[in-house]
Image (cartoon, rainbow, N blue to C red):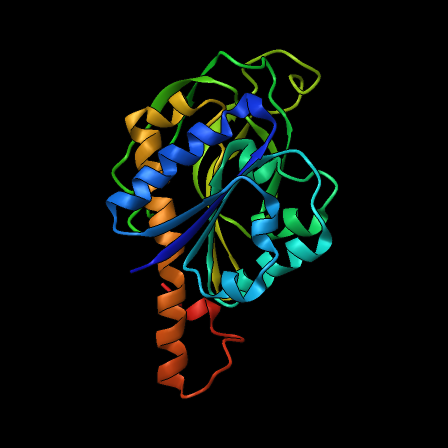
Length: 242
C-alpha cells in the first residue's frame, strides 16, 4: 500500500483543511494509507519522509526552517513524489528559494483577483498525463507565476484578461499545470484551488487526481530502475523514468 503525507496550514483564506480533506479522499479512493498533519514539524523526521510515496503540501505563505525544506528535498530527490496546488504549494514560503526551485515556480500576482473567468487550455497530447480532459472554463483567481523553464507544461491560460500594468505586454500563455523532476522524484503542480470548491470542478478534480497518482508512482519506478541496474545509487536515472 502506498503511503502519503498531507501537511496543511498557513493562510486560512485558501481553506487548507478542506483542500486536505478533498485530496485525501482522492488518494483514499486509490488505496493510499494517509497521514494528515496540521504542522510543518511533520517534515522533521527525514527517515519517515523517505519511507513515503507522496508528500502533499497545502500551506500558503508562512515561514519554514531550512532543515525542514532540506528533509523534503532529500526525500523527493530519492524518489518520493511531491504534488500540490494553488498557493498551497507555489506560494508556500516566499522567502525560501530552495522550496521554489524544487516546486518549479512561485506566485507573483493574480490580476483581477478572485472571480476572473478564463479558459484552462489542456492540449490533447499523446504523452500528457492530462490527455483527454480538454479545455474548460473557470471563474476564480488566474495565477501569474514565475516558472522554472525546465518544467513540462501540461495546461495553460492566456494573459492578459484583467487590466493591470502587465496589460501592454504581448499576450502570454501562463502554465496552469506542470511536472518536473527533482532528483529522481516526480513533482506535479496545478495552480487551481483558490477555494476547495474550485477543485470540485470535474476537470480540475481529475487534474489533481492524475497528478497525485503520477507523482506517487515515481518512487516505485525509480526503485525498479535501481534494481535492474544493480546499484543503490539513483543518481542520473531520472531521465529513464516514464
